[in-house]
Image 1 (cartoon, rainbow, N blue to C red):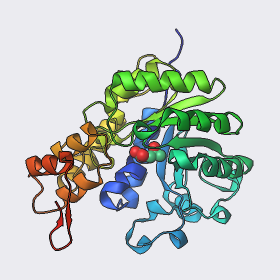
Image 2: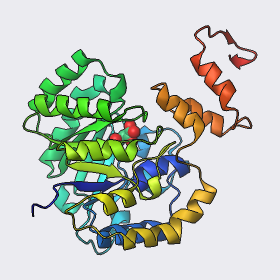
Image 3: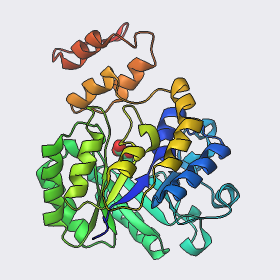
Length: 323
Ligand SMILES: C[C@H](O)CC(=O)C(=O)O
């Protein structure tokens, strides 16, 4: 029987860090690495490799926001088969901070960008590739991208060294038909590139969209344990582990992580399918307005929130804020 080519990239620390400002203990991250490794998961995205020099408010964030190789060596002294990945953003990474791969704990560097910055992202990809890393380009907010922009981006990507190109549903607004459309478009236009998918669960479709992508040849599947990720969160790792056929994954170590850490963490921090996130997802918008609502005293007033987002006659009264 042919083994399933899918590979899981667990983003609990990186995307989940957007929920708790990367306030994960070293024990938490070590237990997660151990659990993912025992479960047979191929990659763990252990944070961002952005530079604190290039970001405001850096002091408040946990160490997983600005990964340091010396620190990483103390966290994971013994690496297993699970590879380590880090994400960088355009304009926020200091190239001089990226060691050659043989001196680093990291195996994969992923570059996140919006469509207008694909050229800049590919320049970074070239640098990381030259330093020996596996690379991906993650094109965010694809649900808001025009066809002509995408076709121009494909031309640049085809000429580049990038290993994997990601379909990213940043707003959690895609359904299975949209996902099929995008996978088909990417496969047709990028015949020599491997593909990845990153989903959000605003409309309860992160898992099914990930499966649709996997069934149609997308190889790298992003997920996070207990779905922990920005706003509505991501496709849950445990669901992929238990559901994907012809794989060697084991569920028990992921369940142990959930019992030991995730249940209590979910009591303290909020993520997942919550109505304001459903509303922004269904309107194909970034969830920032819903995140602000959830942080306010008015957090359960979804009717007013919906009215505000769907009323075209917006006025701005500086004494009262946006109406
Ligand atoms: C690079 C990631 O795929 C970006 C992300 O999490 C997003 O939702 O956008």
